[in-house]
Amino acid sequence: MNVGIVIVSHSPDVAKGAADMVRQMVGEEVPLAWCGGNEGGLGTSVADIIAAIDRAWSEAGVAILVDLGGAETNSEMAIELLPPERQGRVAVCNAPVVEGAVVAATEASGGSSLAQVKATAEELSP
Amino acid sequence: MSVAFDEPMRRKLVQAVADAVIAHAEELTALDQAVGDGDHGLNMKRGFAAVLADLDTIAAQPLPKALHALGMTLVMKVGGASGPLFGTLFMQLGKSLPEQPARADAVTAFAAAVDAVKARGKSDVGSKTMLDVLAPVLAALRQGTDLPAAADAAAQATIPMKALRGRASFLGERSVGHLDPGARSVALIVRAVCGVLETGA
Image (cartoon, rainbow over all chains, first blue to last red; front, side, top):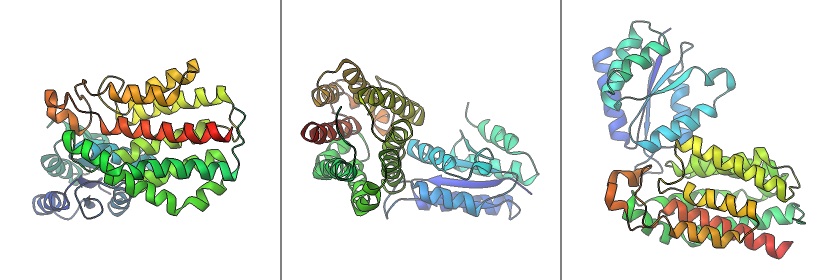
């Protein structure tokens, strides 16, 4: 089973757009979910991120791509609120959200481990 | 501290903190419009409105569990990074405090909570954040000096600081000259808690 990808942006349009790019460029073999916005405005929500991790869940783990600071803080909080057996299998990638999602999904589609997926995405951040 | 943290006291504390934040929502939003994305007041108000909606359930639990429940509500309802940051503050207090804390317990627990916020925000004192009030409040708590005064002074002291964390850091030098909204929120919460504890002791 391939590593899943979660895209978290302050903007639902950005998150959905990045997910569309992943689907078109990488295909369907990677579990993928996105979330963005909060209460009808821009922002991110811990509850939405937990739900997205659940939708993209894979026994191989889930890599999360985030945009601005609050998306990262909320994603880290979301990971800590997961069941203990899942916590160690989710990682936030320090990478640009759009390019990172495509590169991470490409790496994941080849059956790479979560650590490999994260490392490849993070090559984008010098 | 000879305060009994029974159900009426827990209710008073939660109500006072929520009321203080909600009453200052517009001020917090105005502060955030100067240096951030202008949603801090609205987000905090939404979080504490959810806390008040759950007041019966929260206040019915022993202090550690009540604080954890309050923190979790903020995490889930505030939105933005303030949710996890303020949520972590209360959740760690809940983890560290006994059901009937004495003064020494408060110092230890508050120190742990400040460290937890540092870890959550990957930040430290001097970056123009809520930590610039939390750390001086911890110092005042250790020394036994006036907490609301220390909190207010520390919040004001963020004005000349340059933001190094959070959305305000995008502004660089332009963040100088503005009071940090997160710092102001902490000062409001500290004043509210102390107000209840002083009258209830």
